[in-house]
Image 1: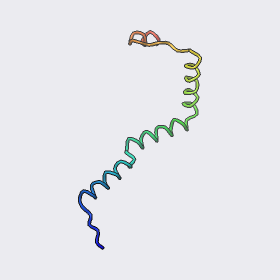
Image 2: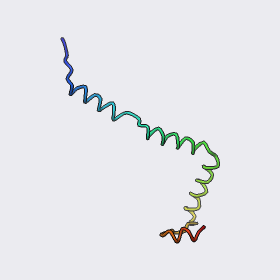
Image 3: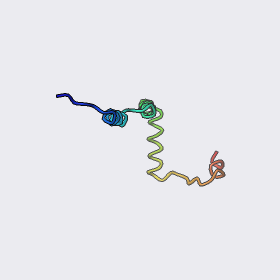
Image 4: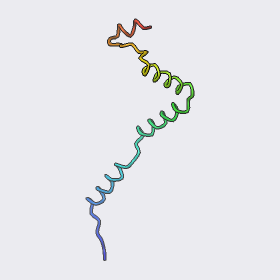
Length: 71
């Protein structure tokens, strides 16, 4: 038995493939994440920042002037 394939079938299959593809943007984000995770100094800084936030050592910056006053 011959089974015919229509253009619509091909189009639907291509759309399915496209939905499952990893994009260049996704790969860039993954590479950035791996680089951060593999940098001990960066991870230590992130951990210290998390602790500062949890312990309330934060300042509210609501304007450029507030930001500049911290420099």
